[in-house]
Image (cartoon, rainbow, N blue to C red):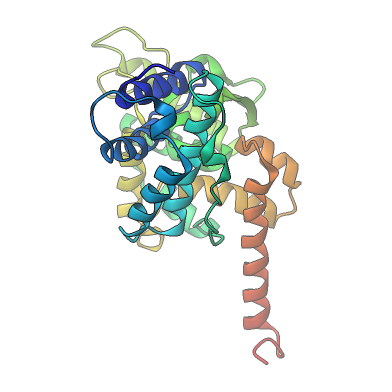
Length: 302
């Protein structure tokens, strides 16, 4: 193989992830950061990649990273990055084998997602002043995060045409370009209708960007706007302190499963590629059940 600048190879890899596989900017930043640190351990001069990306160099790099006292989850992500990069090098003919495939994945302890109670969700929703157009929009945003389990990025990118008012459905483009159809509950539907009736008033200064939610100046929102909208409501709801947009997605899944929803149906609504990702919510529900038993049953504290 000819010599190549490792930094340029990394950029080609990231471009393929972005344009060929539809990876999010958040994931791209993580991959690029991991691989840039790997590249920094070698000379900036061009190398034959097979002499740089070896099992020995990978182990040396991971030992150095572990010395930074990274938590197991961060180390696992780092190994996953290296495995993906090695697989891409193999696919593009730069390597004859993927040495990263031989590296064991660190054991990561299960982590249950945070969620809000129904009362806490309502406290946040009711904190928005719906007598104003802005408050009406903000409540509609959070209603949709909770009512249909959307991610902040999905909510921001949602097109006006993706919302079917008559069928009470929303079409969502999720991670990896996977599309899903999610029901919109009746109370959320009413809040969205209220917002849509006011939406045109936000478009005075510019043409319609086509997204369901727009800013006061008529531009489309981004995930940071969604996080600010949630943070503003949470700041006025003491019982929901620390909640984020994802807390409402977690609450959506937890409350569905608590009330007997089918696990695969919840998987489809969340847009999870793997059922195991959704199953963490069943663990959460079981823990709540055990806690309720311990508190309420006469033998629960034995």
